[in-house]
Image (cartoon, rainbow, N blue to C red):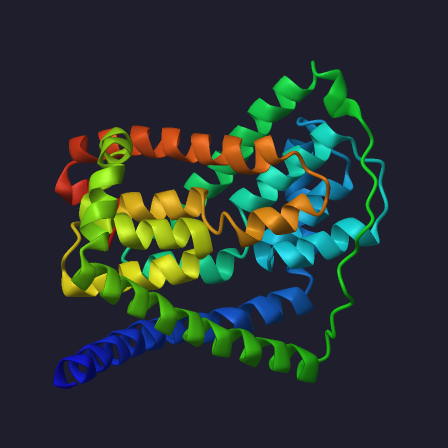
Length: 315
């Protein structure tokens, strides 16, 4: 019994540390997102994004959809998509889906990366250019595929959102509550995995993949959680490790870069799949592209002088 209580105490203490770190980021960030939404920041950004997206063969409304997604989140971007009817082909909607998955909820997610000691500009560029690069490749490939020119039809639309202050406050409190519940569960799961030896087994099984992409073994559990469940969760755990000093700056940067390019493979992919986007593009191509870019990044990082790294990539 004393041993169980000791483990429970450790789990509660660690989850509290992660939760407090995340709340310090999330609460100011969601307020900023709300204010930017009210002043029409997405509409201003849309005018900048319109021309690059036209090069991908996307309709004019794509700029507003992606801008809304970047400033707020994927769900808000989907509302814009379904609010303004447009004739989309399977190739176009898959290309748009890749963009939305690559760059969304920047205020919150870049704040998490910053708290994890990564600088915002390189994380911003990795996600914007990474998402656009994959979208450009897919757009080029889809142009020669007749089946990707098939029009898409939607049988689903997102529920109307209460945009009043009371509705917004209620939804944010609910989101923050469930975030804490998930964090508690994740910390408990990691603790159990560690004492039972599952963590070491997972590292052994994935070591060949890790060797190729260059992610260190001690960053593996947090990276996997972020990739499957979301950047906030994996990022919160990475922040804890960064504060402990168990991860080197290059490992922290590589892990956050990986999560920026490819996170929440379950929830976000399911959301975008509601548009009719091709799973091969929004899941498998995105995963392969992220692993390729991280393999390149992790081979460049050791060649970067420490002083330059501290000045431009980490803090």
